[in-house]
Length: 312
Length: 166
Image 1: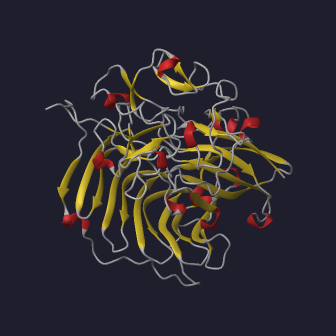
Image 2: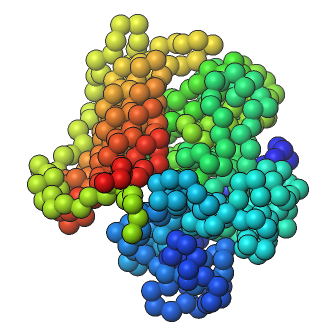
Image 3: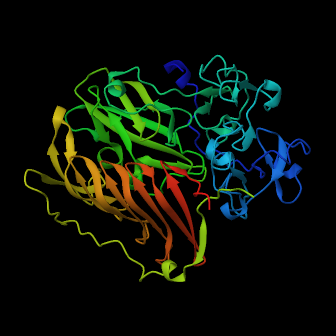
């Protein structure tokens, strides 16, 4: 991923809820009922947006087996009676009954699947990474080369991020999935001591940062650099209604010093939630003696790092 | 049948789900005084665009650092949260309110991360869910309450874990 590709990522404002999702955790009911929306599926089933097949729905974790205990829509919104989801897995271990085995918690389908050995075992548009047994988007690296290998996989950028792209990726304005990297290209993140992040991590993912028109009133003597950071929550998680209850959300200075954003920078009016609280936008102003530009680092605990140049 | 199963236990727990009377947000006046620590000064206010009451000192690199008790406000001036910061990071127990002044949650923090108990409350004051966190990761039992029934799921390193074989 490059700074250039970052600008392609939409802010997900007013993103429509993703009323799709499916049941079964092992694909036992897959492959029979093709669909493009829940309306195509019989009662008790929903349409899986990646498999394009109707699978068993759930309305809560009590409907789900221990191997896939999270009932949610594909975008992570918890399943409910009014908006059923499908049972989603969390770990390879649970998919193998608490041990190791030939099954994986698929990052593509969010269900327990047999490890793939060829791309013919993967959903349309996905390619098998024979090293991990996971079906990834684009090339055989399962999406690690954003902007190239992931190109061509379709998603809907008007839906909530990450749409069908899954955790660790984002849907661009050109409706293609791109993998997000743990950006350590600036000293802010490189010196921060943040642990490495990957698509198997569990924290919120920053998918877009917008350099906003600067709000002079936010700074007294220094120069304002106003920015909005957009992030989506990990599957099954949501952001809190209160901005002061946002977990582990930091701005990093050029020396790598962490600043607690909700405490020091973010006002309640700068905090916006979208799509069932699975996506958030945080608009705030950094004050600096710099006159033309600054480089800022951002990140959530257990999430990706992000470097951004902000100009006046 | 699986040899292992999630440690998910559903028990009748009406007692857990019942709570004392609904806790309301504290009433804050324009001249509200915080007990600011030595070396800090009180900033913000009901009409301040900072949308908070806090104690401030200057930290490294000349940055503004909040240290001591804090009250975060909605744009309306109603209390959003009450807690405290230590050298710019949320720490200890914070209590959260909706704009109608009803308590919605409590969270324990350490250096800005969830660390300890996190509780969610229904509008009637009853407990909706209770989580346990260690340095930003869910660890141990996580409990939800629905119609007086508690469901407990064990977590390790932010993921649900399997129970030992019996």
